[in-house]
Image (tube, rainbow, N blue to C red; front, top):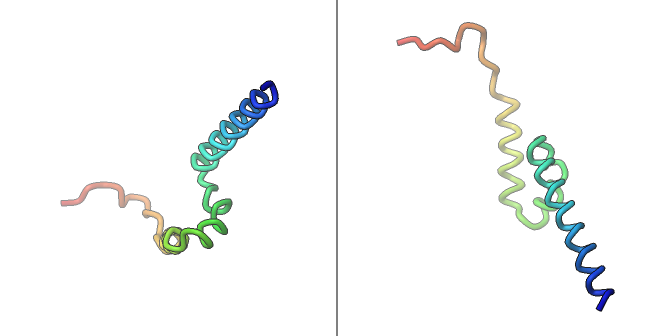
Length: 72
C-alpha cells in the first residue's frame, strides 16, 4: 500500500512539474520549438498553421515612427 502512495505522489509531482513547464514555455513563446515535431506527427494542421504564422510574422513590417497616430 505504501508503494502505491509513493507512486501516486511521485506521479502527481511529475504532472505538476510538466504543467508548470508548459505554462512557462507558453509564456515565453518557445512552445513551438518544443512541440514542433509532435505537432508535425500527430496534428499536421496545427503544424502548418504554426509555420504559416511564423512566415507571416517575418513578412510584416514594423510600424514606422509617426504611423501610430490616427489620421481621418
